[in-house]
Amino acid sequence: MTRLISLFSFILLLSACQSEPQYSKLSGSTMGTTYNITFESQGIPLEQLQDSINKELDTINQLMSTYIPDSEINQFNALASNQCFHFSDTTWTVLVAAKDIYHQTNGAFDITVGPLIQRWGFDAAEYDDKVPSAEEVERLRQSVGTDKLEFDFAEQCLSKSVPELTINLSAIAKGYAVDQLTHIMEEYNATNYLVEIGGETKGQGVNVHALPWRIAVEKPASGIQQQGLLIVALSGTSIATSGDYRNYFEVDGQ
Image 1 (cartoon, rainbow, N blue to C red):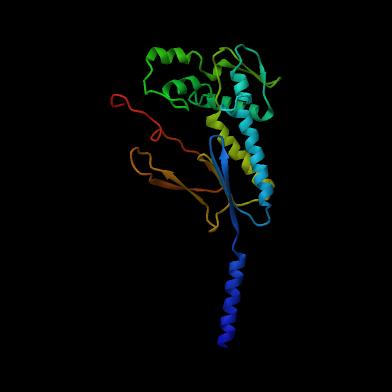
Image 2 (image 1 turned 90 degrees about the horizontal axis):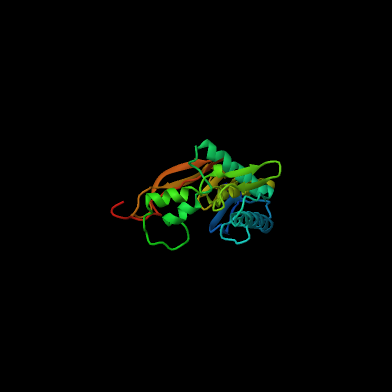
């Protein structure tokens, strides 16, 4: 009887181990940052999925990067006239979304603020922490504003009324890429996954512990070791956070 009970217990334990879901993780570099995808992977061809993900990210990067000289964005930025530049379906979708958000936020979200970002020193260029004068800021603002872009929806092309105006999709391209990767996950019949690109995150289903995906939000305080402030559960939901407590300079106590 003791042997039978032991054998039965072993069979139950083995069955439980075999039924545990298998999760995998794919990671890499893109858009000047990293991506991470964790997902339940039974029956999913990992190499094929990785290839699909890389191709999608390479396509988006080639279209929207401000660091790739011949990207669509940089080709438009290089125009010195009001010529109407024709965009691909992919970039056009993001541009129209950015335009809508610009109006929904009364101009708080603006893909043309690159000159101000650069002058304040919050880009890749070296900077001497010199605060621009009010006059300089006002001068730069003359070449900033999504309202200075003219959308031709019939021809799917974009022109600018100010030659110096440029566009930068960094604040929306990663979120768009996350959405595109979730579509790929669903094409591969993944139902439980977490997709993250540079802090832009979407969770679907549950994690390996059969619980909603849990995202830690950092405490927004400078000069201290990173600390968690709160935990957010994601299932069929996205989250993106941003803060100025890791990227700033101080002049005269401000």
